[in-house]
Length: 504
Image 1 (spheres, rainbow, N blue to C red):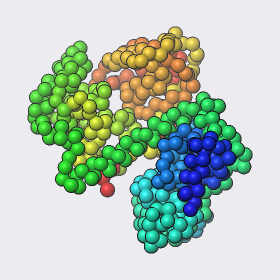
Image 2: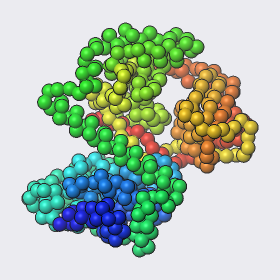
Image 3: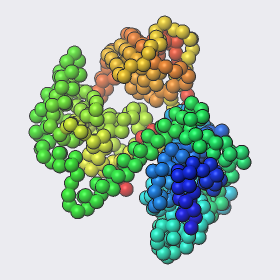
Image 4: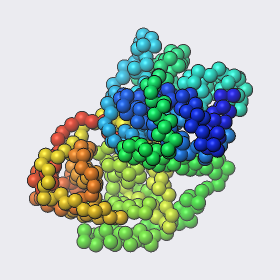
């Protein structure tokens, strides 16, 4: 069996530190890993770095993979997550094809189809269950027979055929919703013929050498990529476990501890502990103290307060917000700027209050409340968008003061005033994005930590819904240039956004 050979080689590597065994695994799977990376980045050099990172991760985690691990599927998913990490971390900006505005295919030929589905394939694969994904990888990426797929999955040939066919239909449905209409035969032929491409001949040897050191001799950017990918893998595993556990518990009529905590306190009870501060001077401290003392609860409701009490804050997984528009609520739930939210369906109108409290609040509790009450779910993906590029115009500006990093980066926001101590430039980009309400991408190349204290003439203005916003965005941009030597230049870049849609 192919999978047994994989695991046997893996055991030989872990028990004997066999370079030959690891090299055999690299040779066997490198083309698949490289092809996933290439689809994401459209850049051979970036694909090589991602491929190296994947096999370093394999070397690091080899002793934790048991005999039941489907290594081919594991490597595919690790490749996808590492590629996503590469894009998110912006270690190097890779060129990617835009997904939008795809036309329905009337004349289906493999040469026409592949350029259309390649940018979407790995996102479609991510939507499959783990066992379906394993089946597709084995059948179309590795070119295995249905009998071999069934044996690898511990099922009969007929069962494997049914599972593969169902998985392909799910993929086909994914593409259809995005304007690419394909027959099953054309889709499977295109994936089989194009999904795995040959990696550079010398890459396998260099990857094996680096992986045998578990990444010690890897470059700084590769080590950053590996660390980020491992975190994303761990988070993905936690999310899967939570989803599976919640599904099982709900199916038998029970509830998780989180839902027990919520049901123990009626919504009115938890809000009885919260009295929003009515002035900016006391707001943060008073609301934070009340949130710390509030009983365990998760509540999302149409607002019972007024615009003068609007506030949103979080810490240690706890969240509290008053009079928040729905996109601001999504922003808190998914930890992303409202300017990066792309709704595919109309969002609920009006304003909302939310609270996530208790000694050990679940980080995804507010997401679950949004899904359960409003039938909306978000997913992160990369899309081209209008942005502001933060660049160095004048070096050594007096307002940008290099400092040593501290455990806590403290920020202050006020009308016409933005101050932060010991923060990286990405924190400045995030602060500017919140003020200017447009994505800001850091292209300064500045490393390290900085203090800055920005002041400019500004005032609040109120829109038709009663929400406030700052009025002097040009004044802030000029202050950033004058005091920090940094300019904000309009651009169009691929960025991570939150796509919000109805639960399927």
